[in-house]
Image (cartoon, rainbow, N blue to C red; front, side, top):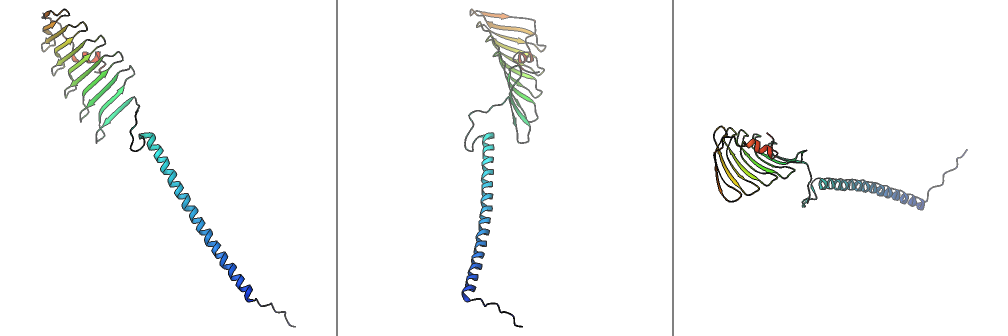
Length: 213
């Protein structure tokens, strides 16, 4: 019994099949290329968005690169040296006092500037034991004074100018007791005194202008 033979493919059919296979291969290559391009585009967009977010964060914290913020707000600022030690403090207290404190390398407060809510102000210079040695102050009634102290913290000389225009210079002994004083009263007349009471100490002068002990 004879079997029917399959018809032989014509050259035209074989050529069409090869063309179709070639076209499918090209389509696969195009799809693979498009996939790689899409992945590259997504990575690029992600990088751009990350850089934009970083720029927004930095500009919010420090301002735009190359620019300076016109206003910086805070209740307290700390100045640190290269080793992280606090060398300066600038801030406000709950009572309204504005204070600037400068410290040396080992943390001693050597210079203090205070401004009270009522307008009184004082500048205090301390020695290496943090005792006030020089206090320059102006109180709310516009009287001003300069207090000089010795190493024990006792006031030894006080130069003052009252709101009425009178001025005084008082000298004290090692116990802080006033021994002599010179001055000019509000009328322009000279004065000389020899009191026996203690003059104000630098610590008291500093306290009157908001200085902490």
